[in-house]
Image (cartoon, each protein chain N blue to C red):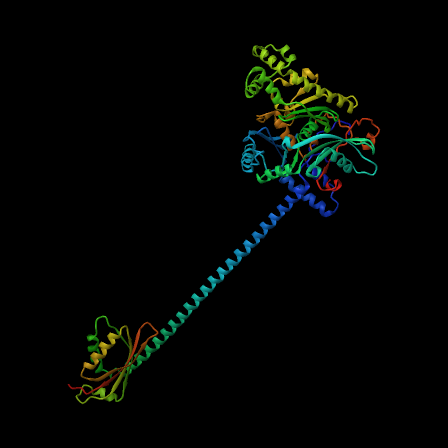
Amino acid sequence: MNDDIDLIPPTYRLRMWQRGWLLRCALCLSLVLAIAFATGAYLRHDTDRAQARLDELQRQNSARTAAIRTSADLEQQKKTLAARLSLTSKSVGPLMPALADVDAALPDDGTLWFDRWEVSPPTQSFQQAGASDAHAGAMRIRGATKSLSTLSAFVSNLQTMERFTEANIVRTGANPGTRDIAFDLRIELGANEQ
Amino acid sequence: MGHPQAPTVSLETASAQESAAPASPFARTLSHLRSRYQYWRPEPLPVGAYIVDDELYVAQMRRADTSGLIVGASYHTQIPAGLIARDDHVELRRVLKAAFAKANVRGGAVTTVLPDEKVRVFTVSYHVEPRQSEDDALVRTLTDRIEGLADHVIDWIPVRLAPEGRRRLAIVVSAASGDVVRHAELWRRAGFPPASMEVVPTATRRLMGQFGKKQDHNVLIINTRQSASEMTLYSGRRLQFHQNLDFSPSALTQQVATSLSMTPVQAQRMIQRFGTGGIEQEFHSTAPDELALLPVRQTLREIIYPQLVELVEQVNRALLFAASENRGQAVEEIRLLGQISGWPGIHDTLSDLLHVNVSDFRSTLQHFGAGNLDLSGTTAGHSIAIGLSLRGLNLAANREPHATESPEPAVDELTDVGVAAHAQVTTGRIEPGHPLGAAR
């Protein structure tokens, strides 16, 4: 038995009920959209971050691979140079003091790395380099330096030395390793005036 | 029933009672889960909010372990003048929030009343023709009485049911739809959407229904308002009739002010301070302080006596009508509501004139355990707010153990009673623009 008075019109109640549910629906929709946008933004940010990380890893990998390759090449070059030097130490013995002089004449800040020495025949000439008739022959020196001026100074010094009739830079180029300028010298040996 | 009823704690809401006995196993499971949930987390009880004469009264019942429901919160505060008339929802929100916080009211459905000046309560007599519905008959009668019925919201309580062709009686509450919606919107925008909006007589009826010692305990409630006063007759929990009174407390105040050459405000303060007192009370008064006040009280009583006599004549007619409606059973007590209920001694004055016990709702509030609360403001305001907060609650637990309940009479039993002895109370609503049956 309902014996209460209520003056609120049912139409008003219905309108309030509809408004309430519309508000609830709008809130739910907003919440769902907000969650979707937040998830999308997070995933996009995560993808970008993962891509950047992948790029960084690839770059590091490439650098590491290059470094390993360079290191391996250098090791191989060192071994080759050491082997050749050991083979030709006697042959180029007379040359070494001259090179020592060259080194002494270099600017203080200049550094030259000699990777490969190639001495062209007749090697016998060098064996008699101490004699006055010792002449003829050629040698190639490959190496690298930090500065072109150092290399130029080195070549100039070679050219001023009496035993070297001619020293030419065959080619220069950038070294992919730590050394900046690679050089390839061809040196013509002349007669020893002494 | 008809036997002493043991107090049982039954605190389900009316809606929960209606949804009892679920049909399907799913519904039974759902009901079981809901009851388990409500056991652990009880639903907040309704809140009654009553605004009158720039005062706000807030009340909420509380579940007690042993005695069913007691008043858990009752609070009174002054609000800015004309707050409701200005439709100031911002200020109303501030006032309500502060009041709810101070009263320690937990969130619940708010029941409030429409301002008195915007609602009409009246008794309607109507006939139901053969093969005519109750609603159709009532709306046909109301069409003649209410101009622009389609723009009104109407709710009604049948008081007397009779067979077709006989005269029936209903108490009708009407208000302009615009006013109701505007008032509901004001509360909604203030953040407290009203769950229901009713009138003072139905709120006080809940109190009377709980306080009445027996089913046909006849009580007349006089609600004095600034604009127009009204009186409502209750028989137990049933409304018997409602009638407007040609009586205004402000007229009494004005009469005192004119007679004593003072302002109405001064007169109001004087009445509230000294009161009117009763002849019987003065006869037994021996305290020196009381004796010193006797001349003032007698003066005040003599000034307002002519207007009180007019009130008494109207009330006496209502008492006669009540006796005819209730097969000679007299009205046993009269309760005062409104502004004059706070005047000291006015109850004794009216008791002397009416020869019926006149009181306020103080004893009712004590019955609900509100005696320990700080009940500033008027007792009437707190009573109505508590009555509003009782809406939808099953208060069988609060009925006094010695209350004698008589079974509700069937409609058939009423048909041969010339003047209906009982009232079958149901309710209906007429929604503007809708057929009556569809709106119920």
